[in-house]
Amino acid sequence: QVQLEESGGGVVQAGGSLRLSCAVSGKVFGSDVMAWYRQAPGEQRGLVASVTSGGSTNYVDSVKGRFTITRDNAKNTVALQMNSLKPEDTAVYYCNLQRTLIARGTQYWGQGTQVTVPA
Image 1 (cartoon, rainbow, N blue to C red):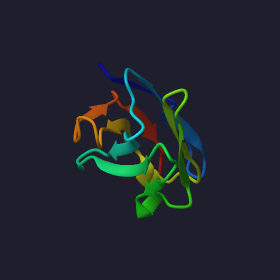
Image 2 (spheres, rainbow, N blue to C red; image 1 turned 90 degrees about the horizontal axis):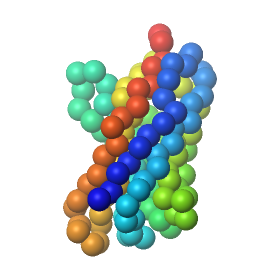
Image 3 (tube, rainbow, N blue to C red; image 1 turned 90 degrees about the vertical axis):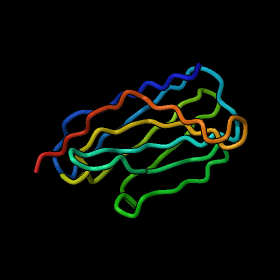
Image 4 (cartoon, one colour; image 1 turned 120 degrees about the vertical axis):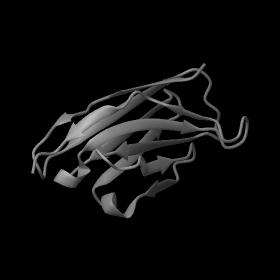
């Protein structure tokens, strides 16, 4: 059983920084992709950033240059460093692990952590 636990959310003023962390327990394969998604009130959950075990990253355009996703394969953790935060970054952020080879398509989610950037 894979479990994901996020930490690091909170309230930060515009222009500030936050670091989200996610610890994964259970089996993680080298082919698994880890990612952060977010969901604002009234909106669908969407991808923020993803990272492979080899370090290849992908970002949604709105966070490029401000957010950095990193992964520690030895510790089975993934982090999201968020700088220059804007009110539109306010959302619940979810850690995600997706199987891409073994059990392809299976996804696991954390419980979510709230990030609030007041206008």
